[in-house]
Amino acid sequence: MPPRQNESYVIKPAAPDTSVRGLLVLPFAQTLPLSVGDLYSGCGREGDYTLIAAVRGSLTVTSHTQYFLLEAGQVLVMRCGEPYTIQSVSDCLCMEVHLQGELADRLLQERMEEGTFLFSGCAPAVRETVMALSVLEEENPPVSGELASSYAYSLLMQLCGARVQRDDASPPLSPLVESAIAIIQEEFPFLEGLDELAERLEVSKAHLSRSFVKKTGISPGKYITRVRIEYAKLLLRAEDVSIAYVAEASGFANANYFAKAFRRETGMSPSEYLESAPRRQRTGFRLEERQPLW
Image (cartoon, rainbow, N blue to C red; front, top):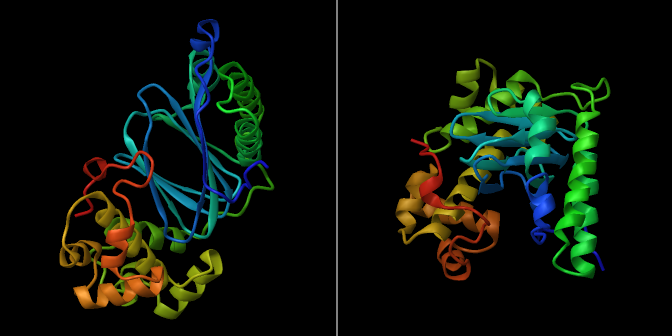
């Protein structure tokens, strides 16, 4: 049975023949279902193209130098060798494909501005590629490198044939909600809560909450908590640290409040999670690669 599209799944095709290798290679693809506030950290290889698709829901992509918010249907293409972080704004399904080779350069490079380009309405093309590869991976792993390259070529053709913008693309988040998300993701260790957030955005708490819930499905206070909990998980998995340190670094007032919030969100205490979760569980994540948050 092929994997369902809402399951985490990683595909690493075999290397293609040398005659194909310099032209177009698809070395990595994955499906990444994320709940609100979930984090995934990775790092593209220098010179490679990383395609990140918001198949369902909204997500943000942050590198050391850039920030993007993707609505459902959009695909971000990045060409950089630096770490990046994907974080869900709502429950979402993200799919990711990496491409290498001269043909990828020829077809994508002219569209890139500062190493990135955003395609609207192209997430179905990425989904089609990843799901086809997942079926092949289930039937006869690993996927043939030449076959993976053929799917990469088909994907590139669909991207290059797409219009820069589509009239039927999903409406973007409002400037208010987008600004709120950016502040939360960048400054969650210091935020005092909804009062401070609303004051900085110069709106009432009621208006901010209504707008945020309408676009994301959860309240801004709940989103702040989930972002803090996800970062706490990364700290707990990545290195030997105390619960008190994790609580403070994640923006909680004290270790007791952190423990209560952690259990409410995860169903277990921080200590139980620390004992059960393997270190560096997420693919490609290294704590020392993450840009400091304060």
